[in-house]
Length: 283
Image (cartoon, rainbow, N blue to C red):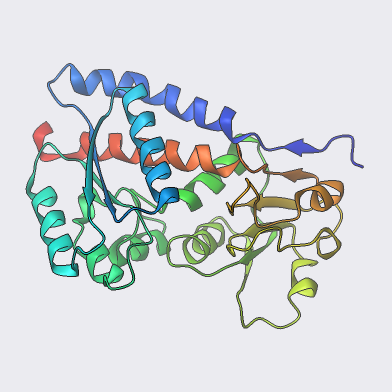
């Protein structure tokens, strides 16, 4: 086992990010502007309810207003879009977060696209994705932003490294691939149709696990000294990598929990503060 192994503690990273926001929030509130994040939950999924509650609590601890909107699972796409349009028009709301996944009968993409770009603090719109692709996004998707924030906090080099991303979701796998590419990594994106997956993972200097399957990535697949960024969260506090086996070979690894999750929330808070700073209320 590598004696210099790093456990990439997301709690420390999140704390540092939130500390940098305190003065900015105070500056805003002194001018009568209270940063506000509106969270929308559709249905009664227990995990989603927990996530929304965690985000709301994090807002309140930092002095950010949290407006929680809970809609029943029978809500239609049109009804949900109408709620978002109301929030778009409300100058006191600076960020809008739709907790996903939504019930299957809702057109999630149509709903995401209803979010005004200036309030898309979770980076879910196509316009936000395009801005991120060009390295110009004010609000990149929060989990990818968290992954890069952790790498930077621990001064882990990205340029020239081979990053293998396992997962291609539009709010995680794809955007983090582009963010790493913009930082001059060589990027391979893997997915459910990828052949020889263990071989490809074995080539990676940085592995980003975003596949949504518990303990899917095996320690035997990764090369000695790889950096493991586990963005998965499954029942029983299990990530997408076999932590014990990967820990033995990695030079640095994020734990689950207390890895990428806390930093994702911190990035959401940061984006909300930026949105408040950019709001027309400042003019």
